[in-house]
Image 1 (spheres, rainbow, N blue to C red):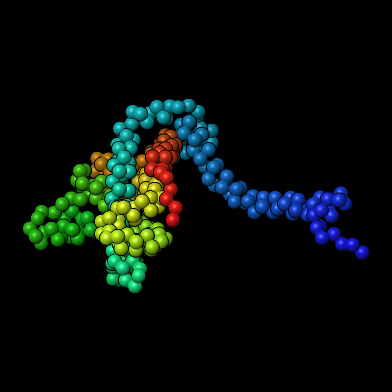
Image 2: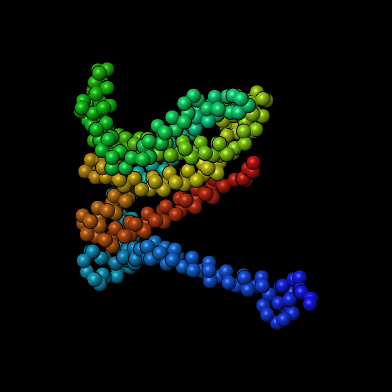
Length: 325
């Protein structure tokens, strides 16, 4: 009896679908079954709220009526005349410039110290002594809830001598500073807290990126006489460009939020005199304090498009030829 060595060819000669085709066709229902539940959940809990928010932004809904009145683009027209809205937008502009820039600079500096500043030991580049312990210390603020961080810095920023900073200033004969009650200082004080909380995560992120760079690259540069300055700016930064790009986008999105810290730290929720207000806080206040859900949704739609535009522009402007290693 003769046996076919190729079951696929035998199936084709017998008029049946080839085995490979039958296996490929049977995979699609299997894959679709796994994707169905996540897609449904994403549509229900992500896409659907966006669609509802866009619709509510076109109405004068007060949060009570079952049939809100459609008013078209009236809410968006009001935004152009709202001074508080534009004050919040300006604050986001400052946050977008300062928070990512300062956070990434500090995180890169610490990451370089912890991973590459120790020179060569045993044929490998090393960091400072005790670098593993320092990584834990830097990452500690990430495990604290934002509300706890806010309460902690309220004690640090107290405007009298009971505050941590002002008590130290008093010891050297300086007057107390109203960190959170001075309009010119309040936003900068809150940005300092944002940077303090975020640095630890990006130290770990950049450390992981540096550890993925082949050690031979640093060793060859060191043998050629490259100092720490050259090692950092000529080798480390170009090879970490993709990681920094992602970090900038994440920090920019965080700068468009800042709700929790401003809510806890600022005077009168966004004060003094709207000196620290941000759009998420104004959305919350407009909706739940003044029951203007339609107008608050219009602010939310504006914030949505600003965030998307920022992320797209950042990825486009910072795009460069990828370095493979």
